[in-house]
Image 1 (cartoon, helix red, strand yellow):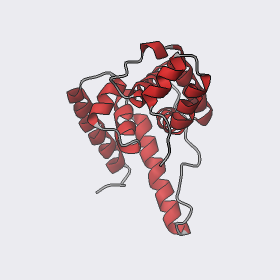
Image 2 (image 1 turned 120 degrees about the vertical axis):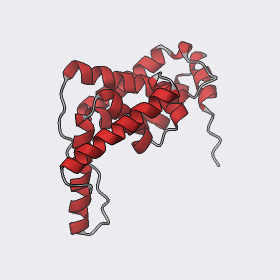
Image 3 (image 1 turned 45 degrees about the vertical axis):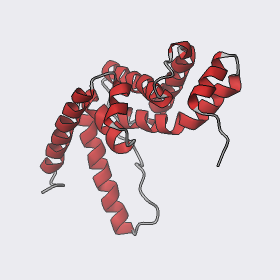
Image 4 (image 1 turned 90 degrees about the vertical axis):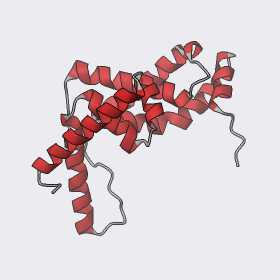
Length: 181
């Protein structure tokens, strides 16, 4: 078991001038934040830039963080907002090359999984950014409804409603491609 300090201790250390404390937070969360952003924007360079922007904003606004909430929810909210703003500004939706496929699958299964993954990604990109955000947070990052509400800054009921609608729309898109019965 590691003796890593918890997020609130690191935030307090950072506010007290400990630069290393924020570095630990970046290392701890850069992977999940990058992956969430990548699922939103589908471009690795943009995802990298937006992830850096999210951490920069978090650092600049660290004194506004309320320690009664989870730090990762607050950080995810910044990152998702950055992603949503980017998607709305740019209107771009580029394909994501080389979506992860398990390397130990046989070649035929690997192609099938890759193809289905590509269709799911294409379907995600056809959804509104708000619907895409709830699906990404729930199904790719296993966020609870409560965490999703905190990240997105909306009531839990709205999260559930958006998730229901987003799933229905994605299902319809996949059915139209013949991927679901």
